[in-house]
Length: 412
Length: 227
Image (cartoon, rainbow over all chains, first blue to last red; front, side):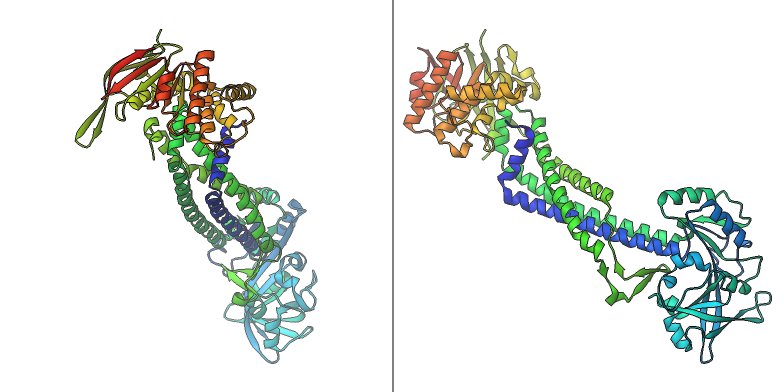
């Protein structure tokens, strides 16, 4: 017993080497696209995670002008009340405040201009790369108003260690022509691997940094970080309805427009690459199918003489293309998974070229990049490979419908 | 009613500025159950006439009717369906489908006719047995001799229970013994099952077996002999 499908399969196996090479070509192209996508997805998610945890939040409340003009006076007042309301609304999420100021830190031996970052120690312990990488001493306690964390490189430059005293000098918020000095004690030293953090930043509690600002319980950002996409969607919608006076409630997409744009541009660039690759593969398939059809003109003539309609013959050619695509999709997806596995488990190490981290649009990225397998996207790519192969068979199939039985039978 | 009715059939071929008249106003009727041989030298128009009767080619002028249906008024799809349901073909070069077994080749037309799998298989085995190929149903064409392949082609031609089988030089590629066997097989199908055959042939043995011999010369019927 036979059917058109089995006939199509047998036709493909007539020239097993040619079919094998074609399947291999499509499969490798598909596997390459899938692997590149998975690696990029891992990178994008890592970048977003770093950006959301370190530079914004899934929801961030900040001064309306902060995004375009992050000046020290652009604060949100009553930050504790807003934070507490956000906590009450999002009991499962992390809520944290941030203050970002500039200053001069001085030790008995040196003075360095740094960024002074005020944070809520408790949530930031889970969010901050610095908090996760304390190499000496300990992270800030929740009510520690005079504690200070700094990077190992900065500590070396200042010649300080844990328990050392450090003075932070900054413009007086009431009168910028005057300066104000705050005394801190080093609680811990971290090594984040991010040069700007390790060498040019100190971290104190929000309470410790607030004297550098003007306002009532001021902070620059109050951020909410969720665990899931569903929580994020609900949280963003709810936060947008909050009354926060003149402050702005932004989603992470609004708060990190450059990062979002970078990812979109990079994604589009990759899609163009995938399309070019697909086009090359399609040309190869057209050539294979056309050769396969031209070799069988006489046979097609006989089939037409026996009563097979040209449309059915064209269907047979399309079916052959479909089977070729299906085999390629299966092999390609298996290869894609095989290529992705080590990238998802061991990762791809760019540390020799980039150091421990690299900055992408102000977001610190690990130089050890991990791929993230996306089954739904793999299925889409595999389906696209099948569709492209069938599409590539359309021209040879059309040629078949143009054949006249007598000319086809007499074809040499 | 005639199975085939040909009237004033003309077929011209254009070769550059020259026109070759392969058929010149041929009139012909084929009755059910006939075993007819179209004889004549190369270029006399035998194959052209066979192709026109089979609806594989279009005439320059004149008409071909199969069981009263005029091929000229049919669409390509309708001609396909007519070939599928009412005509069988045997070609000089066997022309079996190489990826199908003998049984699958025989049931190819039945598949196109939409017969169910069991009926197809039964009929394929029955026709292969009728041409003396019992036990070879599972063999692919490349596992059969030329004579066996041509028998499969005959089985395929009669499997769909056609009104007429058109055979173009079916013995041309066969040795004498195999040729004799094939002619005997077709003759048996003609006498026992009533299958109507029209051959285009140079083979005098086919001419000997035929009830009716039509001689074509330069695209015209020179002689029409009924035995």
